[in-house]
Image 1 (cartoon, rainbow, N blue to C red):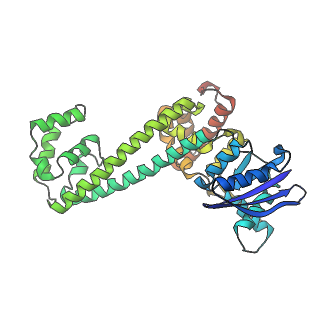
Image 2: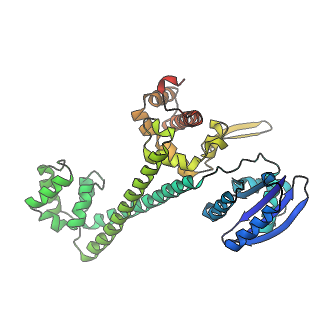
Image 3: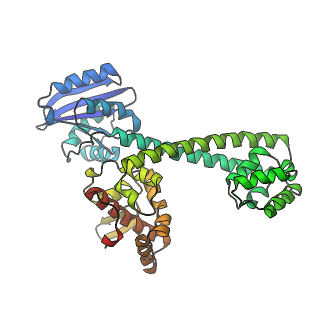
Length: 389
């Protein structure tokens, strides 16, 4: 058996190859992150016979390893990706020295591979990676959109502080339309019947004449400052906000079409929509690498901490390691699951009746959800509440 450790970096990758007997086949060498470097690596790997006995491993380093993974898959080599924390713990168990170089890391990766069960990356992972990239990009843009929403609120506090409370502190389509087309309290106060017809159409009849008259009165009597500086800021921020909102909408459309095409069994659970199902599918990836729901819970960082030493023994909060995107999505699913899924609603109220707080009850709900997802995906069956215990 040949163990190949590769330390991934942006411009180069360091490699080391050793046999299961500890014999060094290739001492540490570097390859460039380009076509020539990949060809050099392939020639070395092809010299190892048989190909089935080659085990390749590297740390999870975001997008830096993507091209190498695609290259190895195309060359019909399996590989294993793992959490860098595991290698850090392994290195500490081997030596107290703090020396760290890319070459040393490649050696450590190869030797670490010899001590664990080899779980190769799934074939055809790129589809999952694409969905993962889209969902994470959407999350990033949503956060930026929220940032500009706060900035818009800050400007409104100067020019028209009564505006946002009038809309229940939410930026609805009607509110954004008003700010985009009028932009100041003075312009809103001078709105006419034609303006009302447009607002009524945008709000689908929800913006009544009484609301229209009240908003005009608030604008006429506002304590805000009508200054050109604030108007300029508001227009710039609105432009950025709308641009991000359009990008988020476009991404959501792509994500939904992809996840519907994949059709994971998680989508059959009432309360879980396409966007949430896409995050769960993308972050977990191939579920064959998980042997139990407990491993899936640990991957999301939702398992409780535990400490025991001598006579001291106590539990702790969530370890919060692993995918923060996955953890955030799973915890946020609790409310829709309680609202639209009787099975999970009953389980939540059972935990609440046991004296558990809302957050703790939600953590139990997520554990149950992960057990359900594990069963559905492993067995390829749709959600059926009558079969739950």
